[in-house]
Image (tube, rainbow, N blue to C red; front, side):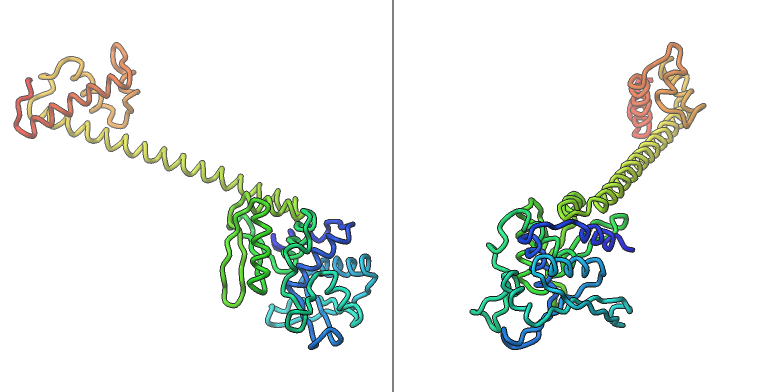
Length: 318
C-alpha cells in the first residue's frame, strides 16, 4: 500500500461516538464525491463512492448508527483507474432528503435545492471542523511518500469546497496554497511540519511518525552532505594556498636565493617545499621552537609580499 493509503486506513479507524461529528465528516465526504440523480427532492437518488473498503464501511456504519439507515454496498472496476476497485454506498430513496438535511446540504433557495458545501456555521465546534477535514481527506485527499517529497493535497470538486477546506486549515494555524489544476481546485501543503500536524489532527499518528522519521533522516543526510562539501571546499582552498606559497618560494629562490631571507622566513620556506601538502598547523609544529598557525601564516604572507615585489621589479630590501 502507498503512504497515502496507509494514512487513510489509520484515519478510517478513528472512533466516532458523536452524531454531530459523524454528520460533519459525512458532509465533507458527500460534498466531495456525491452523485445525485433526480430533479427535485421527491426524485433524489444518492450514491457515495470511495476507493477504499474501510472508508466505505466507516460511512456505512455512520448511516446505520446515527440515522438507522442501511445503505446498499456495490462495487465496480474501471479501466480508467487502472482497474482499481470502487465502492459505492447507495442510499434508499426515502433516506436521501433526511440525510441532506442532516448534512446541511439542502437549501430550497438553490437550483434543485442542493448546496455544494455546507454553510460555514453548520458545524461550529473544533471537533466538528476536524471531522469535516477528515472526511474531505478520506474522499479527495492524498499525501506523498515523505521519502520523495513533502506534499499533501485535497482535490476539491468545486471552488467553494476548496475555500472551505483552506479556511479550516488556516484556522488550525496552517498556510495552505490553493490552485486550479485542469477542472479541479487543489488545496495543498508542502511544509513537513504542517503535514505532520495535519496527519496527527486527523488521527494518522503512525503516518506522522513515518514522516518525522523521513524528515530527520533527510536533515541528517543534508547536514552530513553540507559538512562534507564544506570540508572539501576547505581542503581545496588549503591545497591551492599551499601551491601558491610553493610557487612564490621557488620563484624567490630562483631570483634571489633563499639564503637572502631571514632565518625565520627561510625555515618556513624550506619546510613548505619539503612538505607541500602540510597544513599551516603542521608546518608550525615542525619548527624549532614550534610556531602557531597565525605565526606561520604571517611568515608566508611576508614571503608572498617579497615574491610579489620581485615580480614587479620593486625593491624587496633583501
